[in-house]
Length: 417
Image (spheres, rainbow, N blue to C red):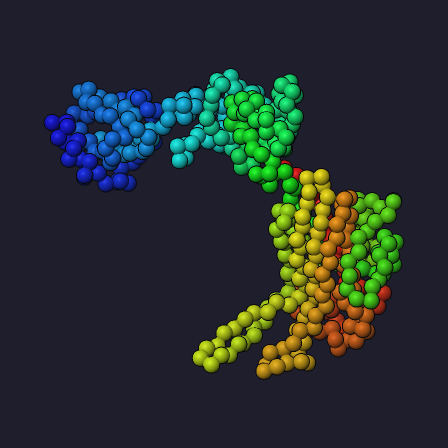
C-alpha cells in the first residue's frame, strides 16, 4: 500500500502548500520521520532519497546530491543531500553554535557558511577544537573593531609560530588572507592553519581588499584672503587647486581653524559633505539644480536636463603603501538669463581640472571659484541665490566681502579594512 501511494504522490506533490522545515543529510546518512495512522506521503523528486517504510516511522537515506521535498499529510520538509565532508562540517558547526550566542549556520548552494556575530575571542579559538582538521565552511561572521584586532593578532601569532609571513586580512564579507606571489609555495601550510577557522587563502593579485577606501571631507566656505595666506595659499587669477604644505603644517590645527571661522570673523562654512569611494571609483557632489533643454526633431521632441550649481567630481587611486593620486574636476555654474536661445538660458561657468599625487595626505584648496568682478557688481549676484550652498552669501547685494572668496577645501583620508 505504501509503495503504490508513494508512486502516485510523486506526481501530485505541489510545493509551498505546507509549512516547511529544512533538514540536511549526507550521502548514505539516514534520518527517520514519524508516521501517523493514515499517512498521505508525497515526494517531489525521485532518486535523491532512499525511502523505507518501517511501520510507525519512515527512514530517509541520502542517495545522491540534490534537494527534494517530502510531505506527510500536512507536515512538509525540504531535504538537502550534501557531500559527506560538507554534511559532517554542518553537523559539527551546528553543535558548536548551539553553545554560543550570536553565530548562525547556513547552507547555500551546498556550501556551509558561518554567519551572525562572533562575540568573544574564546568562541573563535574553540572553532578548531570543535571541527577537527578538515572542515569545509566559509566564515562570514561580523566582528566588533576590538575583537577583530584581537583575532588578527591571534592569527598572526599562529602564522609566526609556523614561520609564515603575515599577509593582508579581510573580514568582510568572507574572511580571507591575501598572500603575495612569492608565498604561493607555502599555500598548503597557510590553508592547513586557517581552514579550521573558515578563512580562505587567496593570491594578493586576485583581491582588492588590500587597497584602502578613500574618504574626502569637503568644506565649501567663504573665507577672507588673509586666513588662507597663513597656510601658504596664493590667490590665483583663475580657478586652481593648491596643496597645503610646509614643515610645521598640522592637519588638526587647520581643521580647528575651519571650525572657528565664524566666531573669529574670518568667514563662513556653507556645507561640509563627506565623499567616500573605493580606489579607482568616482565620487560626485552636486549642489544646485537642473533646467530643461528641448531638442526638437522632425518627428519627435525630447527634453534633456542640464545641471548647474556647485559640482565636484573625484577619482581617487590609493596604494597599499598609503599613497594617494586624486583627479579633481570642479565647476561653479549658474543660469544666465541675459543670454537665451529659443527660450533656453545660457550658463555662466567657472571650472577646473587637476591631478594631485601625495605620499603624505594634506588638504587641497580650490580657489578662484568666484572672480572679483562678480563680487563688485551687485547686478551679477541674484542668480547665485539659486545655488543652495551659496544662497546665504547672496541673499542681499552687499553681503559679498571684497576681501573674501568662495573656496573648496578637500581633506582626504584613507579607510583601511
